[in-house]
Length: 281
Image (cartoon, rainbow, N blue to C red):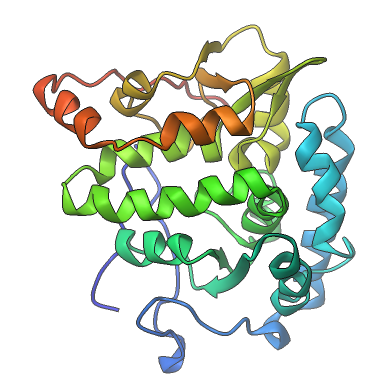
């Protein structure tokens, strides 16, 4: 592919991804899930990651995520995307599609706008068990896909994709990427019984999940779109600030209006907030 994916967050480690695949990667960056290429060690890594994360979920993950997680299927091996799609299409009209790694903005937004979620099809190596700098199949499936079974969240994701295409035409992708980071990847939700995580980057990380909910160190503030889109982030450390919503309906309603006035306001005030994260082991 001629176009390299854009990464806005600060990081000392470059992303990886095989975008050639012998010509099987299509123009939209999707590719077949090469299920036969997974080794027994790959399936075992997935099983161990799933077991560790699922044990941590009670009291830390939002109710909607916990309720939807079984829809991924068996936890003993990497699922076949086609099997997940049989259930997901019936639930919300979404499907997962395989990609070789991070993909550029326009293909990413286009897939979301068409209710297709791109899932990296390779899995981390055993020495990356506790942390990997970019999404792998475990992060994408375990972290993102369960909430696509929730109708309100699924509609929000499609609307985000459509909004992303407009942001690209307005030169505002970096600002919109920050909203994705602080909500879809690292968002918190206030339930009646306490604060819970719904962001995929939190839910797929054992350290970040505990840090986001239980640590006294980070700030937790109500979601403010302008502040969120002004705030830069690092991609390879725990977050120091989290944005909190009251419900997925609130998130959908807040992000439904035309963002063009917000982008104009952000351009007038070009001073970004500093990186709101800290280096943690």
